[in-house]
Image (cartoon, rainbow, N blue to C red; front, side):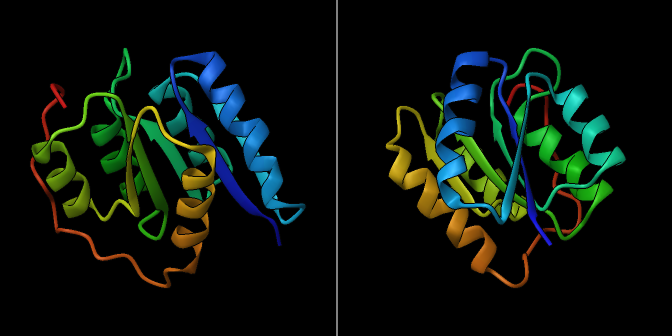
Length: 137
């Protein structure tokens, strides 16, 4: 069965570039792209994903809050957060949510491919019960 990966980024060019490079993972992976958190939630509800790679700063729902909603939809989901606005507070919240990896922009595509492999190698995800998040992310 193919592993389903969703890329969520409001910058269509970056989302497309990520998708094009993740194809290098091979035929066992199915890659989809969307440009809003609302679309990501709808897509995951319709056909759940195994891994979601999301940007932190999104125009509708920030990546941390999206992560929390995705976990409620599917507790075993694996997540990677990407951001150009990283700080220790965001990293701590991401870890508490059980985000597999936290990658700051700009990043090397090789690092992203390694993060995806590492996320799928993890058998269980440790998550806080219900971390408090704000939209400010």
